[in-house]
Each structure stands twice: as C-alpha cells, then as structure tokens.
Image (tube, rainbow, N blue to C red; front, side, top):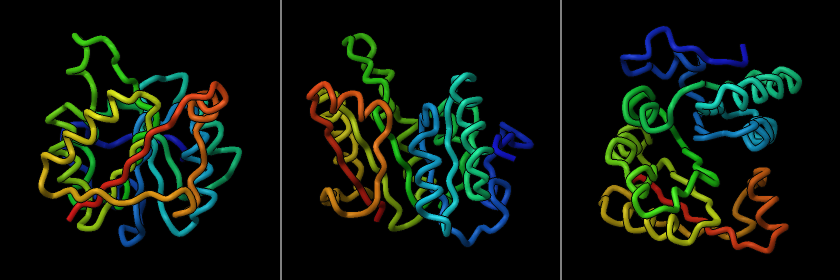
Amino acid sequence: MSVFVPADYFRELRREEIFPDATRPLEIDLGSGDGTFLVEMARQHPGRDFLGIERMSGRVEKTARRIRRAALPNVKILQLESAYSVGWLLPSAGVSRLHLLCPDPWPKKRHHKNRLVNNAEFLGGLERILVPGGEFLLKTDHPEYFSDAQASLASRLVFRSLEWPEDAFCYPQTDFEKHWLALGLTIHRARWRRT
C-alpha cells in the first residue's frame, strides 16, 4: 500500500505500524512534494524504509502513483501537516534521518512564526523522534530561512552541526532544487546530528 493511513491520528505511532520490520532505518521526507526525491531515495537505499509526509492531496496522489509505478516495498506517503506529524505522531527514537528540502520560506516578516525551524512543536518533536546519532538535513534557497534554522538548532544542545560535502552520499535533487539551480540561485544546506 503506497499511502500510509494511521489507525489513530491522536496517539504516537509505534515504529512497526509504519513498516513491519522496526530494525530497519526509517527516513522521513517532510513536505515531500511530488515524491521525486522520496522515490529515488527508496530506490537507491533498499535496506532503508522511507515515509514521505505531505499535506496537499494532489501531491500525495502524484507521489502514490510514483510509488506504485516503481513497485518499491520500502516507501509510503502520509497526508498530514508536518509540525503535527513530527511533534506528536511519529514514534519516539524511531527515525534515523529527517529531510526538510526546499520548505516554504514564509518570507513576509509577519509569517516568520510559521517557519518549521521556528516552531517549538516541530523542534521538540525532532529531538524526540530522532534516534541517538540520527540526522536532520535541510536544503533551502532562502538565506534568511537558512539563518533561522542555524540559530534554532544551535540553541538546542542535543544537536551538533555536521559537514556536508557534495560527495558525502547519494542525494537526489528535488524538482524545486533543479528549478532554482537552473535560475542561478544558491542552495544552502545544513546537516545536524542528534547526540
């Protein structure tokens, strides 16, 4: 089943409810868009499980079609809001990596409170769901959003900034990233480990 529907949206999930083998690493693609990155990661890493989280139904349907066409058993999509998913639904110490790629930067000053990296529910949830040694990876074309993320994570003692060289590991580009790079924009990226 390509679309994951929790039995109960109002309690913390157990890892095996998402994928049955809870010993495999679980990676989350938050705001997974059309699923390009999500499906390619699942294809490149068959020994890991991948859950995309996306709130927009059209994007969820498109991702579900991609998953079905690829016939990959290690990837699913969940339709839900990101901060709630991380803050309350995902299993404690159940996620090995969380990817936040090209999120909405909420550029207007009055909307900065809507940025995930400024959201206490999200940040507390991120601490809770990542396994010790788990990673949070961020890419954005928005310099101010990037600065906010760096300040927010630096204020949390459980996160340590890591280097992220270009050739560190296979990391497919999202459609947004390809578009922005074609326009000559810079993509900022950062990686943190939960200690």
